Length: 211
Image 1 (cartoon, rainbow, N blue to C red):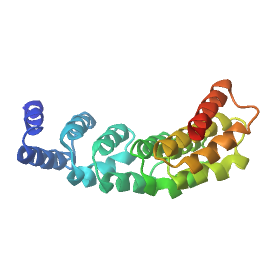
Image 2: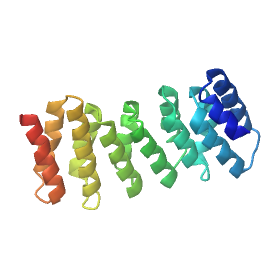
Image 3: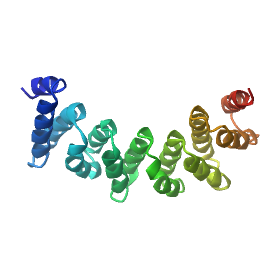
């Protein structure tokens, strides 16, 4: 019945709102982990900003964080991004990597200051995720954070940093910010140890700018 209600709710805004409310109430009712997993999958289909308060507490739950992130990634508006940003103070390790990835997927420009601080995190997986997220966000501030970190990159972190810079440059170029994109391309071009595929991508980017 719940599956049928979720399918019907996609075509009926009032039914969708009512089902979302009942699902949120279910999350707060002390259900088993399996039941809450099921509820999250339904909220992924019908969730709106109204369900953010019910879902955000699951971000620190090792068993449910990934599903909570999927729900929040699918919800438009600033509420979901804010919930993800605020959860950074409550998670660590793989859970933080997941939250950082979600902020990148949402291209949340407001999270750039937090992500800029995480690119120097002692946990290499967190640092790499923060770099990748900054690249996806692709704003001028995100680009500047990556550029400023260049002198501090270690050899193991250099590939992740360069990949993030390349993505950031592509995002900037797609948005019409040619000068900012060129600055990153030139920085990457100056690395004589860069991988062949990276050098080729940089050359193509610079060629697009010079047209």
